[in-house]
Amino acid sequence: MSLFDPINGQRFFAPDLPGYDKLLGCVRCGRCLSVCPTYELTRIETFSPRGRLSLLRAVEDGRLELTRGVAEHLYHCLDCRSCDTVCPPGVGIGELIVRGRAAAEARHARPWWLRRLLDVFLASPARVETAAAPLRLLQALRLDRLVVLTLGGLPGIGATIRTLQAFAPRLSRPLRRELPRVVRASGEERHRVAFFLGCLMNVAMPDVSRATLHVLARAGCTVLIPREQACCGAPHDDQGQRATALRLARRNIALFESLPDGIEAIVTDCAGCGAALKEYALWLADDPEWASRARRFSARVRDVTEWLDAIWPEELKLDHEPRLAVYHDPCHLANIQGVRAAPRSLLARVSGLELRPLANGFPVECCGSAGIYNLTHTARSLALLERKMAAIEAAGAEMVVSANPGCLMQIAWGARRANRSLSLRHVVEILDASLPKTAGHDDDHVIGMSTKARKRGDSKNEF
Ligand code: SF4
Ligand code: SF4
Image (tube, rainbow, N blue to C red; front, side):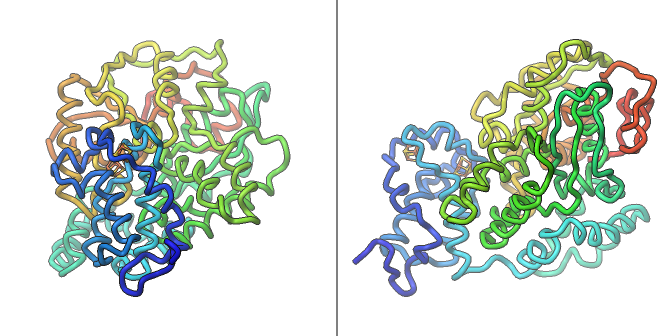
């Protein structure tokens, strides 16, 4: 009997979990236990990377029934990928757990409302914008609390609605529709890049992406912005909706292939999107039509900090008001993309900014945001958030700088819960506020925010 022959009622469906040989690669050394946040919180083996791999293997071997409880165990993982940074044989634990979720989906589907949210709304930026419009109105009229009072007691979804209201940032007018297709470099064009606008950045942090485009232009980049781009697929992949994630990946690859030649990089200011875009090569590795196209696409993806650090013009000096800050490493940037030095190196260029170390070492201590983990596993997410807030407090920081929308919103939530005044900024916002004054550039108009406002470091974002 082949390892991939299904035993009815017991095993994953083999084509969904092609990494059985990788499961065998775990030598049970236990290195991953010391860096796994869920193991640290519970001290239970099945909440550890090694334990999760053992569950997958037991199901594949037919020794354990694939019950809903087993499937749920895979969702206790934050997908923070700290384990991957220390695993000696390089098993690829995080990817295997996510593949296990997709395989389990056929037997134990995610809740209906979540699947609907992912398939109907989150697959299309236009639909995200449509769905965000009434929420924006409710927030503006301060009626969101009324919704919580009305629906917050509903069985199954009430707790999620309550957490969402507490956590959600103030939504803004979407940026996508007002963006030009091209933002020209200020002065001489030194580079030509494409920009990937994340769905969350579009409706929740448009000023961050405005700052990104402005900084790229000032650093000599002409930026092409294909407006037809789809969601990166990360939320779908995270929640076991593999087929949708792959469909979105193929669509984005084809779209960016259609841009004119000469694009040096595909830049994004969302670490979560960047991690997914860089993993397209892995996601589509077994697809004969798309594998090489996905590899070419992923090889060009750069986090904005990674790109700017590589091309920053030495003559462009940065000056900021004095601030004591810490930099929080997003798991999806540090652990998955391996980008740790670039944001620090950029921030070190900013005079006036004192960057203090955050007691999280490496691998990164997750803040508990982790996609929608704070909605689906709120208590554990809050425990991790409190640990992060204590580290920020211990560093004596008045500002937290990061590079991922989810982390910024989560830490802002932590500050609100602790009634603590804390300034939250994306790296590009710091750079943008620190640029030398200019007489004004074309991009000031098209990106829609005045030089004066940027110089003050003003942001309409309320994380
Ligand atoms: S570090 Fe890697 S090899 Fe060691 S127990 Fe964890 S998954 Fe297995
Ligand atoms: S991805 Fe994070 S939470 Fe999941 S097993 Fe690895 S270290 Fe633990």
